[in-house]
Image 1 (spheres, chains in turn cyan, blue):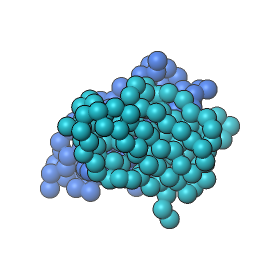
Image 2 (image 1 turned 180 degrees about the vertical axis):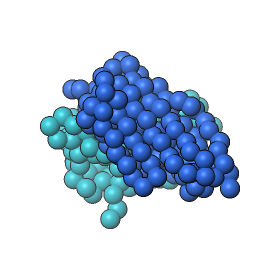
Image 3 (image 1 turned 120 degrees about the vertical axis):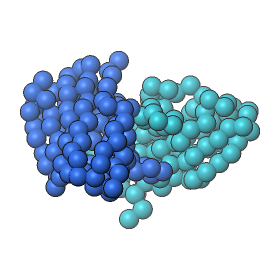
Image 4 (image 1 turned 180 degrees about the horizontal axis):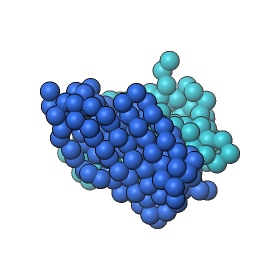
Length: 115
Length: 111
């Protein structure tokens, strides 16, 4: 069972470059999330999606964009990379029924450094 | 917005000692979940609590949800080196589609 798959696992970017972090899930979950985790800190929500074609901002959306054209895929785009975006990025998915969020399944993460 | 506070930030215990981490929300929660993250790994779901005053056990781990549904705790009895990692609580406000994570409690267990 693949679960949530993130690519790439590691990446180094130069300031001002752009890139897309890929995330795909094979559990037919309706909800998907992007988090960033800085050293010693918790998870901060960047963007989330409650279904294909629907996305919404989380706590720290600035500098990022997302799209959700299919149930399976939820890519995260960095347009102009800045050193403050150096972090570990986690994608997660879950099912929600009757308003109650079910457990989130996380990918292995993408470790991103902006130099 | 909703805030979830978790204490302590860090705890170092000797193997065999007990460990407890506490989670407090600024708002009433419909749902609280606990996750464990091993060093270098990703968060892994442990348990979900929904009912006021709920207590659930998983072997040496005991999870509680407060009567007011604003606080929760995780207690580990007789820690083992395999318990090492960071434990996060995550709460869902009623009507919201997201979880708010606490900053986590890092547990180190010395043999």
